Image (cartoon, rainbow, N blue to C red; front, top):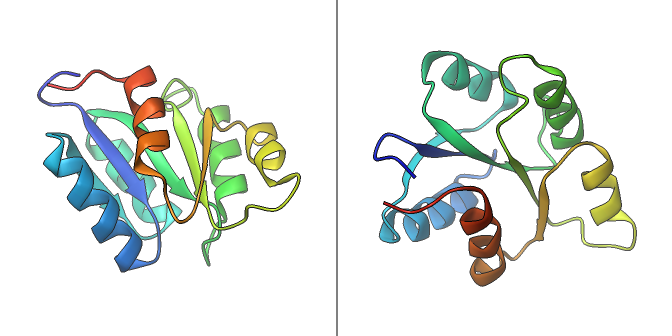
Length: 126
């Protein structure tokens, strides 16, 4: 991971954002945050340093499933890996996330060891 690369956390719950951001920053990752898909798009358009996206699947404006489909259909953002993070952990939910185009899936409460496996798969720490 280059020093300018960042992880974008998209979640409408500030407690989830705070927890993820705190742990990732302690591991020397730069983080950007958005509380909606529309806010995330603004960040993605203005900051070309996003190396990975962590997205909550249940958000009020555009849910994670639709957001991932739009990101993966984009000529600009389709190469950025997207990890679905969700409290939806029932049978079939992982498949639904992966079918929408997610590159990984982590159920809430987030197992940071599992999340770090995905992060390390897609980006290298500084």
